[in-house]
Image (cartoon, one colour):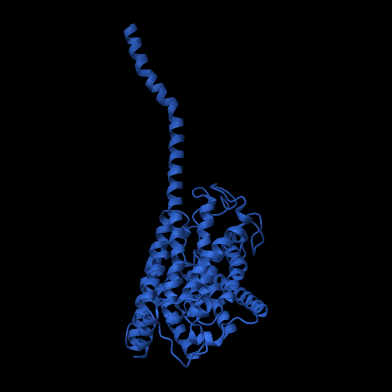
Length: 468
């Protein structure tokens, strides 16, 4: 009998232990799973942030290849300086004005100097918005979200430089960037992406902008157009053609931009997973279609497909898909790329006919591309792709198109007025915005920076090649 009881006891003790341990084991398993998800999402977001930062040097090469050899350093410097200016101001005040609780138009001051912005995975944005869209809740630290958004703030004003290269003084440009990135950009970011923002999905107008169609491309494109108008054309424009001095730079820059754009759009899901995949696929699909369409249009209308054309077309497709990337199907992304490339192609041609000196076609590509992309988002968006978004026209919600147009119009007005005010103030303070006329002819590199992009022999070779 004792033997039987002993046997039963020996078998019962492990079973009782297992029963008692089950709740602890389940809780521990959930905690481990949550930690793994947090680590995976944080790694994904830090890589995405690095990719977006890479886009700014990519833009430097892209723009640098277009200008004359005597202005290449100045042009590239106009992108690189953003990593210094905004990389600092974003920490001091930019992030707070962009995302801290405030008015519908701009954030508050409670996150100045990143006060209260730590490594917590919950906070102001947490739980108040769908986790898959604009929220750092649950999986990534607040500082991860902050530094990811910093990379957007860096590249956006750099885009403006393309319209005003080869003639604006670097001092005027420096202070323009300080004011534009420190005041105007936070307004656009807060209105679209922050809780309670005037234009956004969360307590606002309801406009869809997944990764920056209005915040980045329309704001910079319109500001570029206004800046080019305020400064006036280059002294040599349009009498002396200014062919790109280094087409391989343009292709290198476009490649870096395309690569970085996966972080730009894919990272805007703010977590690794299905939504990031949607944005990733849409991004490359749109760029591919746009580059192809641009080349075909050149081939048919101008006789030859060009390297500059496919690079410009791909960038136009990337611009067009930016607001829609997390809301549309791959086929819709293909159509958005094709339509955006066509619109931008003819916008560039119209700009040339009007002889308006937007030097590197910033508005025809970013302004027009962002506008077309934002409107097409209202047509092709579907909750079947992203339940946190909204249905567009083709999914039965025609009012979304009107909402998108309204958001575009508001962005146009604010960007134009804000840019005019900033430039007029700077012109009054500095007594003008342009370099001396002699510097335009001799080269802005030497005049503004005291250095050259190439040695004298190389520069002479470029000049002889262009003459030939």
